[in-house]
Each structure stands twice: as structure tokens, then as C-alpha cells.
Length: 407
Image 1 (cartoon, rainbow, N blue to C red):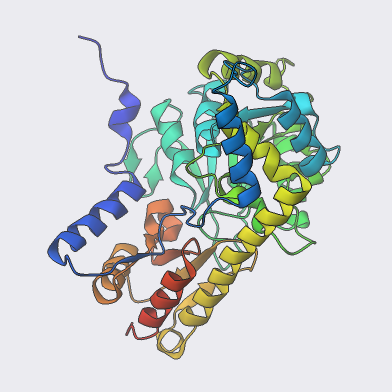
Image 2: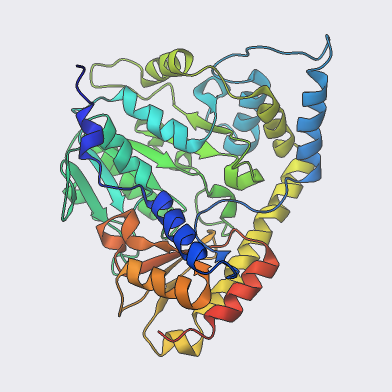
């Protein structure tokens, strides 16, 4: 018989988000009349904006005509969309032929593992989005989980004490560094000075940064960088992964992109971009043409105005949640709320509880779903992530319930 990929055997039992969903289902089964509100998984809730929805609908209708039908497109993506992303979002910091359109950031993060193989050391922010580590384990770049995390992974604690920016000196030379800003789950957004340190370290030590910028559209502080390529030297050491999911509410539409600069090289001088092009043309067959039509609409003048309003809606939700979570019942209990105003996530520390314990307490007593911080890594223990993705009436009701919680 064929042996199992040992990477799957090394995975810790249960991916975070299915476990959250499982506990919610179990609670609902026991309390069928409970009106549960989710402030957990980062899934957008508001309708697609009119301009973008119309663009996709028009394209879909066109597929029913001889003149409007389209089959396979370029695996790297629609040329017009690649050019639009380069023009609107990167403004000369990346070229169209360095941009690859995909079916979402999570998929790209998983596929990027194929570029580096199982012998490349891995370093991740702690806490971190689970796919960074789990994807590394599946391809064999990390080993079985222990009490302090997965074997072979260098965890970079990002805590309130270090302002959520890690000590880079512990990273091995020639490592793959996963870095997310604005961060999921902490919501922390790196400053230019912090990213300068990261880029300088990577270039000095032969590392490559996988920079996840999926939440860049939430940055409202003009002093904060929205792309790693705002930092001199980043084109020699960084791949950027990005998405329309949070920018335009495309979590169900599935559209993202990666940027792989032509100046990024492997140790032997060969082109990382050339290999990524091979990955995308061999293991991927191109993003949906309908989704790409929506992406183009999101980046024109009307689309940009609409998407800003959509993101502002979620940011207002976050402000309401911060007010509720800094109420007297929480502050008296020593609860700490970390929120920058440039992210859809609030990172909240409960000093008396383990993450899953406070998750269960809030589910049981408030009928509100959150996300346990420990599921994002060892440094997340004691924290919950609160997501601002929700209908306003639900957020208001959740805040009302939370204001009565005794912690």
C-alpha cells in the first residue's frame, strides 16, 4: 500500500475554524432557541457593492452569447487586471508581469510552499494565521507539534510588551519568514521603521519574506505602509500576497493576487518569479473570468469609492466593539483591548482565563461566537480575536450582551 504523507500525521488535531464551528453547532443543538451572533471567523457579511455586482452580472450574461463567451484565460491572470493592480495599488513599485492573479490569498500562501520545499527553515509571527504553519507541516518543512508548537518552526512572539513586532535575531539564516500586516489575528499594523528592520534583516541573512497584506485596505493612518514594497530593498527579498476578499467583500467570489519581483533570486541566482510562473501555469488554471471582471470594477474610480465605504462600515463596527469591550465590567477585571483603528480585528486579553474557556463562557452566557487566540499559536493563549465583520444590528446586539458579561 502507498504510505500516507507524513505531514498530515504531524498536524495537530483539528484546524481552528472548524473547531469553532463545531462548538457553535453543539451549543445550538442544546439551545435551539438561542440567537447566536458571530464575531468570530473573518468572513465578510455585507452585500457586494452595486457597481462591482453589475460588472460581474454583465460578464456572466455575456457568457451566454457568442460574442461574450470566454473560455480559458491566461493562468497568470487577465492582462488588464494585472496592469490595473500595478497602476492603482503599486504605483510603480511592481510591474504588471510580476503580478499573478489567483483564487485567493490563502490558496497562494499554500501554493507558495512548493517553491521552497521541505528543507527551508520556517519562521512565523506568533500568533499567526494557521495556514502559514499548517501548510509548512503538510509539505514537510515542519514536524510534529509539541507543547511549544511545531518542530522546526521558529516562533516569533508578538506581544503587547514588544508592541507586536518580534525579535528578529532568533530567525535562522536562509529562512522563509511569514509576516502579516495588518496582522491576523492581533490587528497590529507594522510601521515603516519596523518593516525597514525586517527587510534589512532578510537581505542580510538570505531570507525571503512572505508578506501577507490581505487587510491593507483597512489602513487609514497615512504614515503606515500598505505594501512591503514601500520599503527600499524589499523587491530583493519579499513576495507579497494580497486579496480582494476583505477589500471588496469577495470571500465567496474568490480572487487574489501575488507579487513576485523579477529581482528576487534563489541562492543559485535563478529567478523566483520564473519558478512561480511555472507553479501558477502548472498547478493552477486561472481565476474565474467573472471574478476578474469584478476585480477590474473594484479598481476603477466608482469601485474604489464603493469599496472604501464598505471597509469604513466594518471599521465603524470595530469602534463600537472597542467601546463595549472597554466598559467598566471589563476594565475592572483587567481585560486589555488592543486595537489600532487600521484593522477589522480586536485582540483582547482576559487575564483570568485560557482562550477556549473564555470562548465557551461568552458563547454560553452571551450567545456570541469569538475566536480563541491560542488557536493562532502559543503567544495567543489568554486572548480572543473579535471580528468586525458583521451586520450593524448584530454588532450592536452583541455589544449590548457583552456589556452585561461578568468576567
